[in-house]
Image: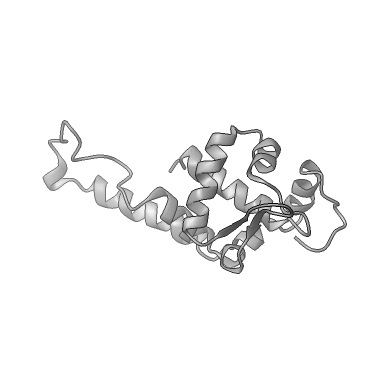
Length: 150
């Protein structure tokens, strides 16, 4: 299974925000840290806000913060939400597969996809920033590696 770039970036944004202590990075800060375009990051942040995982504060002292729900979110659940419930293969596309009415592969791929998500269900966003990842994120984002726990 391959994740979309959108989902990959969303997970990296959540991880970056999970190590933010007193500093509230802006969307531009996060985009620069992750070395991705601001416009892509802004779309990801908007989706994460809609899901209730990220809070954006405007004005002086504003920035992005992970919500308590975002910190405790299941990685499998986040990926399911962002990737959608679609099949791994498109059997009913513009040129439908002639095997679709009796295909064993489609069901097997669906089960494999769910097993992939299920293997990530116990992992939380907070778990993703345990050492050695958290200190590395703090280092590349200009934070203090000794500041609190990720």
